[in-house]
Length: 319
Image (cartoon, rainbow, N blue to C red):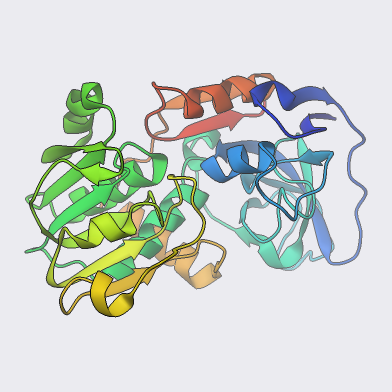
């Protein structure tokens, strides 16, 4: 089968499109024919060698959508069933979705009834699940003013779409480090745009809710922009910093404020169904920004890392 393999860590050139043996079925696992998958920043970190538990060679990919090809759980996962899989140790401890077939643990394969085209279906699982979980933890109400830090990212755009479709009149502010992206962010649906310089937002405004996708490198500054009684959800790590250091919760938390997070590794079938129901109920647009073929996976990484990366990139295995 065709797959994209990382033999040693490094740049996008380390994503090698090649032939590898098709995985052999084993007890407790099922073989999924991968139809498409989303590309994520965490996979860039893994490719660079920053996921310390990962050994190489490895087929990356923390998510995929496809159909069951061979099964060890015929009742729940019959052959031909449409499925999604995400997180666990997929693409880290065992080979992931950057391939024509993926052998996956049954407990992290989720049947989904959807007739969406594969490239649109693939834009949903990891990105919208992360955005949806963050939205729930922020406990947003229609009167809130919301800031999305990392507004041009895939999760940022997904979060914006989830909010905008439920609350059409809500003031939602997006941040970017690149002022030239302002118009594109406005078109995407943000009410206003705030730029960021050297890790500091170029505004003195405060907000009721903040989704911080930049992470530990930005949390202290984000807290300076949270209103009394507000909620900050730190979900992403786009700033490349994993841990929050020298943080005094008594001093550094905003007044009477709340700090929460959402980890997309906490996957439940119930929450996935709730997310898909929400997307259907509010007619949330889920189209990706770019679609690549499997042989173009390295280009998808370059696009996501580059100055033009905006929103979600997916790979259609048989484009």
